[in-house]
Image (cartoon, rainbow, N blue to C red; front, side, top):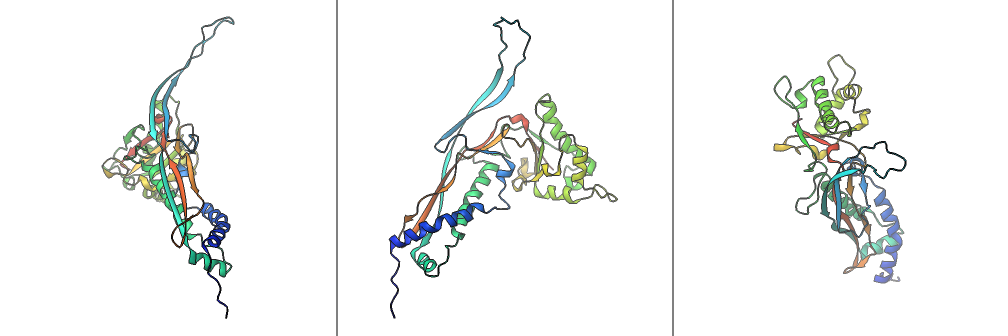
Length: 310
């Protein structure tokens, strides 16, 4: 019986290249339930994939128009108080590999290469971006979304039982806490900023989403909040974020009011994960990928507020 010749490295490379578009399409289509940075924070790559730092300004603008004569040169000029900040753009990498034996088997059986390895690499990238987006990275100088030093910090008041924990509060007390968060931003900015989104730890989110307003009510606390808050117009604007658990001072749970709009806050991802051409490695091939992350920029820090102790 004739012995089937083994696949050469050149043949293996050609087979791998022919399979990669299928593998990577499946990988980039997949969504991960606990990866939600791109739903919570607007993202941008406006810095460009070759940027090694990002400079931006925290803005506090003021201008007042006035009536002038048609020939007047006395034009009021907008005055913008800014704070210049420069943060690094960090370069990262992740990859996956196939052995020549795996390629031989797939070719012999006429099967597509499994996408699991590429999927693990993709998930590794998404997890790193999730952590960096939410908490930042002090060692790298990357600011985060949930602990940004430029966002004002407050704490919720104690309820009638002497605790600030929402599990021990009434629906009216929780509504008061939420409205106070949003009104603090609204009033302190003289109605310039009006947050539209409430972010909560999963425990508190589940509690208000699943707990009736009262023993005889068919309305949940969350529905009661939407119906009675001038700031939150949809239950979809109340979102859970894992990383808010223990994010507050002293390890307390943190709530956050903010405006989910790229004019107010963005996550800089100058270069999204991109897999490169496969490279020979031993008796197989590695497919490297690279990316960059630049952290979270609050363009208007006063448009958001943290509240600890919920």
